[in-house]
Length: 270
Image (cartoon, rainbow, N blue to C red; front, side):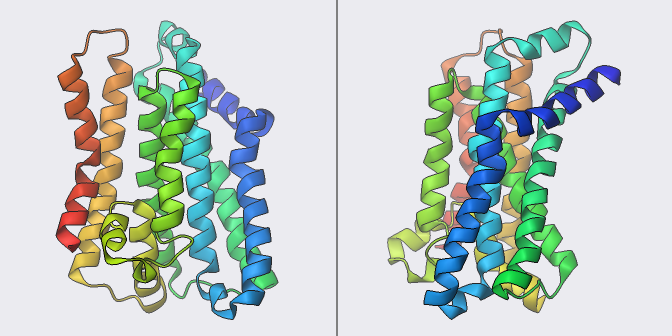
């Protein structure tokens, strides 16, 4: 218990002391939020209606796709996790500490966005707070698990950045964050259904403000949960098996499992 607590406090402090993590957790999402909201709220008055979910999506992606994998890969490649095992920590405890720390940092930023969005930019509060929290937890669980997977499989820090950007940039462009999915060409609308942010943005108004969703929305939310669950389980297995011989076909199979919920959602919504 003491080892886990020390590890958790180390991860919390790293998020505030490490320049890369500090930028990804706080500076980038908050700067992007204030700059974009200041401009778009004047250019397009209707933007304030989606300001909060849009900026929450950006903040979560920045933290879990660009910040979390960097932290996990750095500690793993430097042998820190191996030293934790020497002192009796389990793989679950080793990964739980950075995940909880990451969740707290990002949630703090999202709370700032939610309340300042209301009182500075006049963005509407969620009508149903319980549904707002549920949808937020689904989004961060799915994306955080993908970030965990990237941090566990990346052989070096450079590839961590590349893999994170492979999900981050398309999510911004076609995942319903910068451009509403219904304004995209039809082929891109189909592709957008593979991204967790697209599911989040498409369901937000119906689930959070109206409280009424359709069967296909329930399926998409379920697939969002299973995306997080499968990614987490695969990541835990790979980190626990680190140093053991795992065949290339097995690696490819595990990777395909992570992508499976996204593929199913694309096919289901076609």
